[in-house]
Image 1: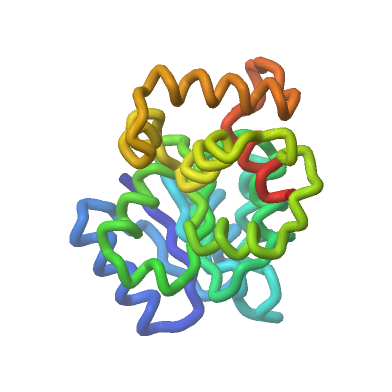
Image 2: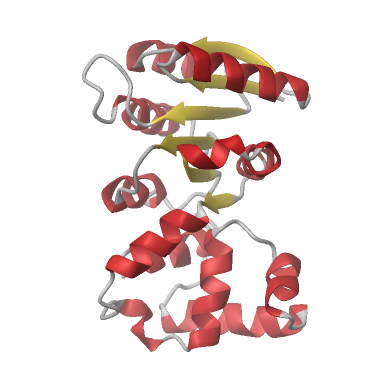
Length: 214
């Protein structure tokens, strides 16, 4: 699996490169700034990008914007962004396309090698991964008056685990319920959030987006 990596700190970039290579990934480019990232995403045609949100030259959101620009040209290009802080605007912007194959991890999560590698693989396969700490902090800031206010506590539990990129089987295991029960809760979530079936949008992503907007 071909990876483009963007991280401005040399030691972290080198460590991530080695970690990915040790787990069977081919790092086709490891860059340290936004313009170089965009070129690599378009020229090297990676299977997945691992991107620090803040890159030179301004250290604002160059990494995220380069990834989003590449996705406009290569729709559904898998992108896993890394951030030192939780930022609801960035999470919302990343999910807004509704196409899936995206992830948002806090940088302290990448010290857990298995979780980091699993997140890269999930995003590369078209899934959505949100760091549990991101979800918890966004939820703590929320006043719960958004569209998800109609959801039951159990449905919120299911949606929270969906936001972490869990499959129905994994959600069932975490909540000690059957997969059929998860499917029923998921259907109820889609209905309450008024997310209709669509060939173009990933309904799980749209549900997660509604969750993050709470």
